[in-house]
Image (cartoon, one colour):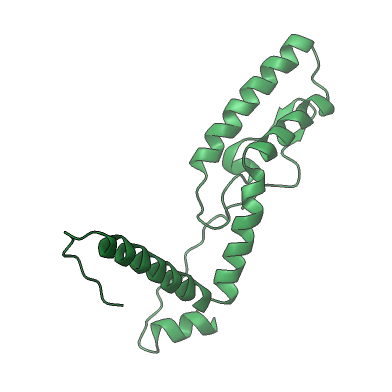
Amino acid sequence: MEQHPYIKAAIGSGCEWSEKRIVAPIRLGGVPRAYDRQLLILGDAAGYVDPLTGEGIHTAMISGQIAANTTIEMFSKHNYSIDACRAYSLRCYDAFGFEFVYSYLAAHVIYYIPISLDAIACIGMLETNTSISSSSSSSTTSSLSLSS
């Protein structure tokens, strides 16, 4: 990290680096296959973690509910095949997997072009100021004034 040009530029030369910490990586955006015959992988273990925010509790809860429903269905049909387990994975993708594609792209844009985050924030501020200005100018009793 000390060698990354954007990080070096952001923190300057006066930074002292502490000893490196060793942590386990978090699988982001899902694993290629979160099922097998008589096996359903849920939550963080399946990589159901948003690549942009790192949030995974919500998707873990959803995948748990989907796994429970899939398991009930498998028991009722006495079908524990790989195809029956594949239904779980497809249901998870339908519930939240498509969001990971957009989060992954946004995370890469922010990582490789960090100034894009500043640009997005500026655009958001302009839109917020414009919307507040237009709503306050339409009201005759408003005393709110904003400067850009």
